[in-house]
Amino acid sequence: MAGNTFGILFRVTTYGESHGNGVGVVIDGVKPNIKISEEEIQKELNHRRPGQSKLVSSRQESDKVEIVSGVFRGKTLGTPVCLMVRNADTRPEDYDNLRNVFRPGHADFTYYMKYGIYDYRGGGRASGRETVGRVAAGAIAKKILLENKIRIFAYTKSIGDITAKSIDYRQIEKNPMRCPDNRAAREMEKILRRVKSGGDSIGGIVEAVVKNCPPGFGEPVFDKLEADLAKALMSIPAVHGFEIGSGFSAAKMLGSEHNDELFREKRNKKIHMKTNNAGGILGGISTGDDIVLRIAVKPTSSIHMRQITVDRAGKKREIVIDGRHDPCICPRVVPVAEAMIALVLVDHMMRFQSIKKVR
Image (cartoon, rainbow, N blue to C red; front, side, top):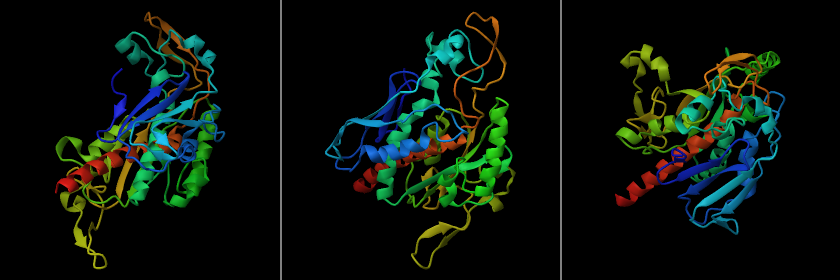
């Protein structure tokens, strides 16, 4: 099955299915002598795992990571790093009644049409559980970025019609919504409780800001930094839209409004933009200003309501999906989004560093 590897110089390949033996990732391109521990990776995985509150999936997975290869005495060897997380709280019996039925909103139908077979247990490879490997790899990527003072802050910007009015990064991990506005977070929780009690789900928007990314990351034409970020984030299950900077609102603006004027700081002599409609990227290359982007997250496809579908024979069927599912996936998309952004930035940082050596 193609399409499981991401990146050029910093390459990751994820593996595993939702209710299989386990999930994980192989990372190639990690430089030697980087200090890394299972505890550091575990910290990132704990942000993603289910069962953290009554407003997310009740599946109880510790997501305990194992470093299988590529690390010796706490330091990377320069060889491929393999990370594994074994599945524990699997309940494949929850899906027995769906073994021959295509679930609305899921990849069952398309996987079957492409391969002639699919894992119906929780979506198999198409499940959000696949993102465990991404977050594990992202832990290493984020550490590399932090050594270069680059930080990523992702958070739930909105759920339904409730939008964060203020942005305080310190508040993100202080509420189950991972919202930087505690007042908005409380309103989001009310919506989720109502939606969950009705057996339904709801979507939202996750926003991310990259701080201290230097100018020069990105490639012209096809490997533009925003293009790779779009691919990375759109590859996350449940993500249905991407925008950067002013995004789709740019379609309603004049050029005189949208263009970001440049100026030179007196203090450090660095060049910046007075506004940031570009979102920190021009011509596919980072400007040195904050990279600001947003992704649209669709409502969770698995809902506890009667739905009409068809089976493999094309016969009309009525189904109700059992199991443990999130009424809104946004809070758990946040760490995955940070991980994918980190993977893109490290890859482009390595490309940028190779160009500087040539120059």
